[in-house]
Amino acid sequence: DAKTTQPPSMDCAEGRAANLPCNHSTISGNEYVYWYRQIHSQGPQYIIHGLKNNETNEMASLIITEDRKSSTLILPHATLRDTAVYYCIVSSLENDMRFGAGTRLTVKP
Amino acid sequence: DARVTQTPRHKVTEMGQEVTMRCQPILGHNTVFWYRQTMMQGLELLAYFRNRAPLDDSGMPKDRFSAEMPDATLATLKIQPSEPRDSAVYFCASGPGQGIETQYFGPGTRLLVL
Image (tube, rainbow over all chains, first blue to last red; front, top):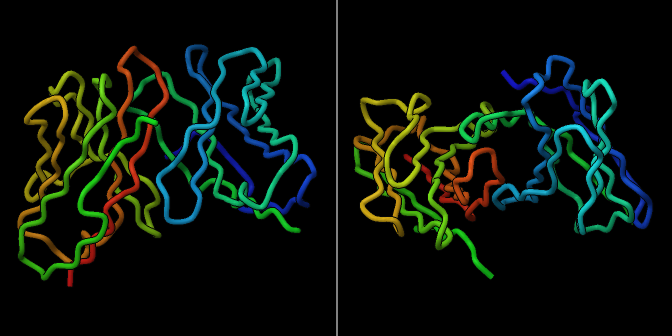
């Protein structure tokens, strides 16, 4: 069973920030939070990961609450090409990446 | 631009036939993962290799599935005999193998068993 809870779907207007929430209330101290996305018919793509601190890269920002029980992935300026299923995963082991159902983000013009 | 490659991209076969799927990990990566994705089950880990040695294949049906790494540039997943319930997209992913890490996925093999 996935250790995370995500809303099944979200919409976002093109050019606006997309904020995707993830609850992981049972996260352990040594578990990282990972975000991947899967664009239709393609393999999942790594976006970002973090342990405690907020992280930012060229794709997105990851905000982790102080108690680490939830996080938010932020796509600062969503484009139509960001339409995908976004997976939030918590794991401390490279062979324990359990992909749940994810959030289907639809970016609308 | 280093990528994981998988062949074939599509495979249609009849029940009972052997299916072999191949994966070329990113050069220098020493961990390889096989996943299966279906609408009902989502993305499931089947097997995991590090330095060509199988470390975890608990997610794989042992009676018909086998996974190997003949060399560092090739990973194979075989199904013999195949069944209609094996129809799915099979993804290979590789990683640099430095502990907890990101995984880089291939484009997948879409298998249909009739």
